[in-house]
Structures are given as C-alpha cells and as structure tokens.
Amino acid sequence: MTTLRGITWNHDRGLAPMLATAAQFRESHPAVQIEWTVRSLQGFADQSIQQLSEQFDLIVLDHPFMGTGSKTGCLEPLGRHISPDVLKTLRTESVGHSHDSYFYDGRQWALAIDAAAHVAGYRPDLLEKAGAKVPETWDEVFELARIRPGFVTTPLLPVDSSCAFLSLCANAGEPAFADSNRAVRESTGALALETLKRLSEASSREALSWNPIAVWERMGTTDDIAYCPLGFGYSNYARPGYRKSLVRFTNIPSQGSRGPVGAILGGAGLAISAQCKEMPVAVEYAQWVASAECQKSIYVSSGGQPANRKAWIDPQVNAMTTNFFEDTLLSLERSYVRPRFPGFVEFQAEISSIISEFLHGQNTAAVTLRSLDASYSRWKS
Image (cartoon, one colour):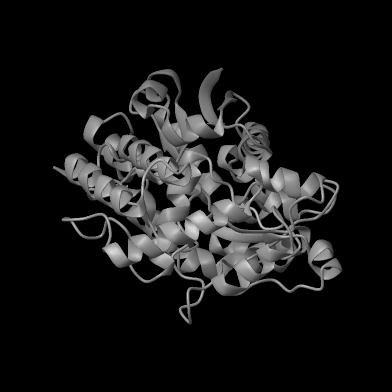
C-alpha cells in the first residue's frame, strides 16, 4: 500500500474536496491511500512550508509562499514531471492569474486547484427589507452603512486588514509594492487607509477580530449583517441549505469609474514536498485534481471552489451555487497578485500589525505609511 499524507485548511471548502478526490482516486488506484489533515486558516496564511514539507507529501498552500519555496528548495518543481503541454493547458484554462501565481523564478511550484479573490457578499432579503440595492461604488457602500451600525461589516482581523488595504490601493489605480522604492504613493495609501478606517467605524465591533469565514458565518446564521464589501469569497455560503440564510456574492465596489478592479487574489495551490518518496503517484493525483474534468465535477460538487475557468462558467456549477462564479468572475479576472519574494509571508505579518495599529487609533495615516515604506525597504533589501 502506498500512502501519501496531505494537509489543507480547516473549512468545508478546504477539506471536503480533498477527501472526495482522494476517495475517487483510490477507486482507480486501489493500492494508493491519501490521508488529509487540516490546519487553521491562520496557519494556512503563515505556517512554515519548510516544516510542512518535512511532514507531508501534498501541501495545499497560498501563492505568497512561492518565493520562500523556491529559495529553500522544500517544494518540488512540477515542470520536472508534468509536460509543457499539460502545464500550458492548465494555464490557459486558469481563472484569472490563479495558475500563474504559483509560477515563480522560472518554475511551477504548485497547481491551482482553488480560486478566490476579494468579492462582496450580501443578503438579498435584508437589502430588500431595507429598500436598498447592492452597492456598486464606495460612495454607495457608505450610504448603505448609514442604515445602522454593523449593517455593512468587513472582516478586519490584522491579516485581513492588510489584504483590504492592498485591494483598496489597487482598486484606486495603484497596486501596492509595485515600486521598489516605496510601498505606495502617499495619496493612494492615504485614501486606502481612510476608506479602511470608515469601514472599521461602520462595521460590527467584533469585526477587528473576524476573518472572512466569521463574517459569512454571521451573515448565514443571523440577520446582523446585510452587506460585506471586501472578503475572500466562499461559494459554500451561496449554496442553498448550507446555512439558515443564503448569502449572495458579487464583484467588489468601484472607486470612481474604474469598475471592480484590484481585488486581492487568494485561492490555493496543490504543491508536492521535495521530500515526497512517491513522486509519480503524487504528481498524477495533483494533475488530475487540477484538471477541468475533476474541477467541474467532484471537486466543486463536494464543496470545493475550483480554479479552472471551465468550472466557473459552467451552467450546472453556477446553478448549484446561486450563480456565485459568474457573478464574481470579473473580480477574479481583474485581481491583484501580491508579491511573492522570499520572506513575503513574514513581511505580510509585519504590515498587518502596522495597519492594525492604525485601525486601533495608535498611529496616524502618515506615520502608518512611513512604517510601511520602512518595512518594505527592509524586507526587499
């Protein structure tokens, strides 16, 4: 018996499709057993992939780890095992930049199996009751927020505050960390921080300790929140019967006439540890899970959120998710990809603390922007 050990993150979207695909893979490979375990969403964001690669063969991870994976050699370059034609097909079929986000320093370090970006979520019934429509601009978001405190709520846990800051910068027309000399132009950064502060003031008091899952859970189980403008999308909550109330999803608001641009890209890729002793079967499984065949069938039907565009535009897939994929596709296709230089994950933790201090009133916007510049300069040097 060949046994592969894998690790993903602890949510139905992260675990259920891996268990389902492992079971189906075993039907055609009876001598192969794939065991999946989970780590928290916070662990998914910052747990050391070097350590994970010593314990697991298959690692579901986020693309900001690619620079570290390349530098340390803890992940297996998949181009050694997968033909250029197959990789080209996966790239062509990828939704947005999902596949390319795992390509770094000339090599493919993971296959995109899950795609997400910041999107907006809303409760149609609560908006209708309030006589309000789904906002399309930030001015409309803050008009909606006047209905009552918490009616509009954004997840603002430190790491999610920094992700929101990055989306807001890109949404305003200037992606952060694109200039090697500074984090972002002062006018853009100040606008993003001001918007973030206004979102914090409008949101539930608990929002500073919430991640996106916490907000979608609250929206699906209570009537406290009617609209969230920025949160990584979870199609599970758009599936009838998943929670008491259905959450619908749409594209992020626009700054002026730019449209829904700059939503920070999330999602997940499937990587293989360089220490894996069963490389051929691990590669075969990973390649199959990333394929359109798997992505638009068992992967999504079991609760996964595919990275293959064929699944995103499939009528049956959209029917089971109240049109989640088609309704948010533009945000994915016009998304912002974070830097992936070695150490970016640690750098992201540092800037998350800086922005969190601003939201707690400990620093001004000017001081915060200078701190971001200093941190960026340190990590990039």
